[in-house]
Image (cartoon, rainbow, N blue to C red):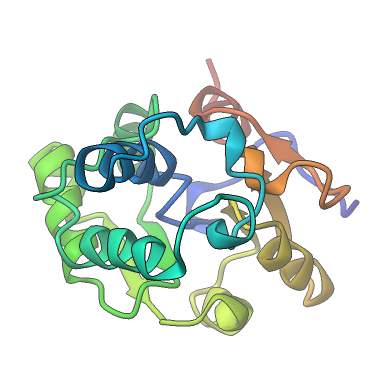
Length: 196
């Protein structure tokens, strides 16, 4: 593990969106039940980032659910991860906060942030939609970030090889897939960046 300071400047720390800020697991499970009748799913059942590999669900259904979430994140009712709104608001009081998502378009993330965050926080959040899970390191480095929080273990392993210190946001789909530092909650993230 690289040398991690006692407190990380929010200016140097980037965030993934789905599974870190927005609760992608909850909305996937809810839409699977409401729209397709898969009502016995639990978050713990999603043991792979490639959902169709771990659930008995047609790939077309999985794709349809994720497409709906990506196209209209506010409309489908994606909830924030517990504590994300509060801690992001605190971090934006100190610095610009950078969100780098593998989503192909930033509009739905901007819309969601506008719906969830206080108006004062919005001008201090930069969203980069780069459309590729495997090219995040380039964007992270371009934005001068040294640390990044992501729920995809494979992304974090790639970042680690490029000199970026990743933190894996604990989710069932990244369990036992890495030996990198982890955060289990937004309270953990708050502790990385903010003094009490």
